[in-house]
Length: 296
Image (cartoon, rainbow, N blue to C red; front, top):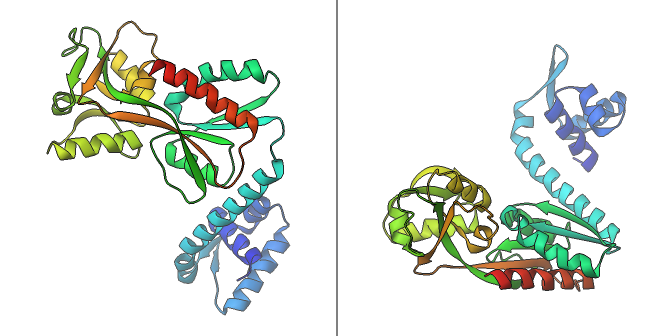
């Protein structure tokens, strides 16, 4: 099958009709029909049977479709990279950042960055760490900001700042006494707001309670540290988050305690491997290092 055959096959699998597939591909219905017929002629078997006005995939088509989906995903990655390469550097900074760090650390860094680049266009996308690594590899961003190390063959990493895990809870809630520290084991033995294990810090916590031989008592599981902090502020229970996120709170009801033993949390910058970073990227990271190191 040729690429155009695969595109038509995928479009019909997605839409179920020739007319809808034609609209999706921005071609005529006759072009879709002719391409499908040519593909089936080359293969020597039918890919679809017609029932009423819909095309029903045959057993062969259903077996082939998972591989076609993987190929279409790879083709889309190529298109995205080629588009990003065509844009060049220009007067534009593209930042990819995890949601929690976009709440305070990013605005503070942009304030300093704007003082030097008042006319620079800045686009910001919040994504999860693994998504950022993939996007930087495809050069869909100039710089990514994540928690921890995410080794990728097409990505270069730089350290930005090192913080720590802290326990946050509502002032006056059970266990939120006047102490400034709390044992990690004590938090993990009770009920708390849990970070999804797909998050690097969530995975770190999962490893910690596995080492202690404990099962987590999580009433609520969330994807971001900021959501965990907001829920803790509202009294839904304690949460273990990073110190950078905790510093974003302006709420006097939030009680923050250091964890013992200390568990370090690193912010890292991700950059496309083998490409010299433009000066605005260097200056943005300098600003981000200043604000995160100042608060850590």
